[in-house]
Length: 154
Image 1: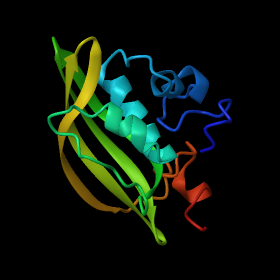
Image 2 (image 1 turned 45 degrees about the vertical axis):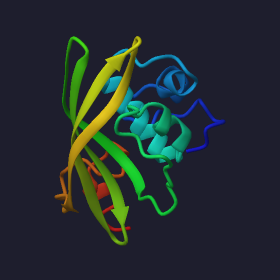
Image 3 (image 1 turned 90 degrees about the vertical axis):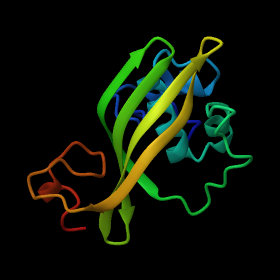
């Protein structure tokens, strides 16, 4: 995604344009909830924005540096659940990516913490696997179309 073209849909899957979605958080406004922060972090991975990822990672668990070279070609995001209670939040999501001729997913149950009026990513339990979409499933490329009419024959 070209960060200078803010008229395109946001990669986070919100169905909003980037300029009215994750760009707000990328430009410094605090994300209002753990799910919004997680979506903006997914978009930052898509855009390879390591500075934003580090800035929104809690200081207790943040790595010293983050190299996104060789990162997967992220294609779509599915939020399974999201909750917050006081200064703690949880988000369970699946992020899909291309792997050669096939598809894979990263699933994570993430923990977030709110400090100084801002949410931060704290940590997450992850698992990965191969995705085998059925012909009538929504295509993992993020198009919103059925797999059989989108990427099945590419």
